Structures are given as C-alpha cells and as structure tokens.
Image (cartoon, rainbow, N blue to C red; front, top):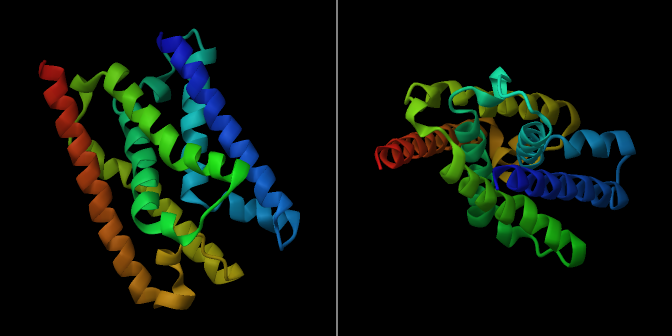
Length: 203
C-alpha cells in the first residue's frame, strides 16, 4: 500500500510540475532562460518538487538507511510546507486568477490535491514519536533562504513571484512585515503538526 501510494504521489507531482513548466514556457513574454528562472522562483514549485523528489526516492530506493529521507521530521517538514502552499493559495491567491482547461487541472494539483495527499501520507506513515518542538526553528531555514533569494532576485530583475513580497508595490518595510507574520504562521503550523503528531502517537 505504502509503495503504491509513493508511486502515485510522485507521478502526480512530476506531472503537475512538468506540465506547469511547459505552460509557463508556452505563454511566456520573456526569454526562455528568464521564464525558467521565474518558474523556479515560486515557493509552490520548489515545494512541489521537493515533495515529488521525496516520494520518488522512497519508491525507487530499497535502502532504508537513507539518512536525509528517514531523518526524524523530514516528512513532517514537507507536509508543513506543502500545507502552507495550499493554505496561502486558498486564502490569498485563488481570487487573483481563474485558470481554465489543463491549467486549472495543474493548478488544483499543485495547490489542493497534492497538499491533501501529503497530509494523508503523513497521517498514515510518519513516525511521530520522534517529533520535537525544537525542529520548528530549524525548519524556518527553508522559507528564510527562499525569502532572501526572491528579494535579491527581485531587486535585480524587478520580478516578485507573489504580491505580498513585491517590494516595488509594498516597499521594503511592508514586505518585511509580511515576512514576519508568515514566519509566525510557519512556526505556529509547525508546532500544531508536532502537537497533533504527539497526540496521535499516544493512541
């Protein structure tokens, strides 16, 4: 069952990411290289790639000693951030556009279906007894590195992947304020997953 799920989730993840890239290249108004850089500047894309890689490695590897994949909290880390992708999109971004056809399918996969499937996998298979609250601080390194990257890249190119990090509109202070509240949200969600995991482990 677990192996079958990892194959299905990996296949869905790669399908969504690859088709989204193809759609972005097809509809680009900039060069292929610039469009590619912008593609990999979206937190949604990076996180879905991490999820697809995770399930691909689990499916193809027979070696259970892969330290990074089997490290305590790795699946929880991915689940938290793909959940962030889903929640932020539903609350702050969904109303900004109305995709049709294959774009709508891919959009739902990246922002709705895959987050739900990962949460389900986490519920079924994460060894929750090893979760520690101290991991929540460590997990902040991912969005922090991402935030620094998009600010540097945006300052150079003028492109910001999300409206709530657009310095040209909000100003640096406004973006820093948004980043602060998002960091609190990340920490809160991480703590919630760890707490829920510990409660589930007691059953």
